[in-house]
Length: 136
Image 1: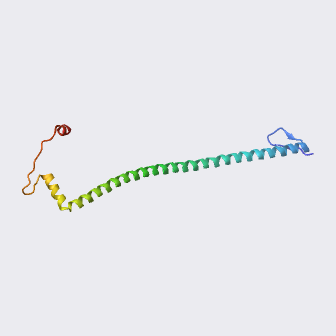
Image 2: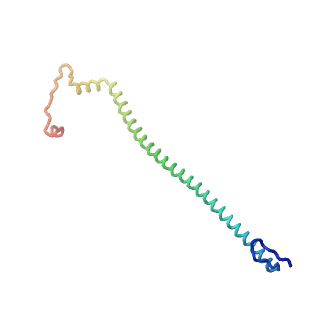
Image 3: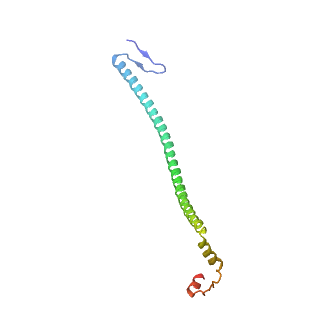
């Protein structure tokens, strides 16, 4: 039997089959622990990378939703403004049509500027109390 001396160690191996099996088992266990350590470290690295990716994508989704909401509000505001502009345009078209009508223009001038036709007399009636109170 051959005795093995380990450097800087006062313990020597007997070298029998049991000792060799125990040493082989220790090597296998040490290798298994090392591989578990490596696998755990790789798992944590992968989880960290996945977490960074998920945070990045989540922030992009949140920013996208905020932008979408802002655009939707702007669209609603623009729709309201468009509706008001269309109403104003319709009113102006009606006014243009009326201004092309001679009788309407005559009535408008008589009402606004107190003009009268030849031989026509205009009477100004005093205002009632309720209309005077309403003005104050």
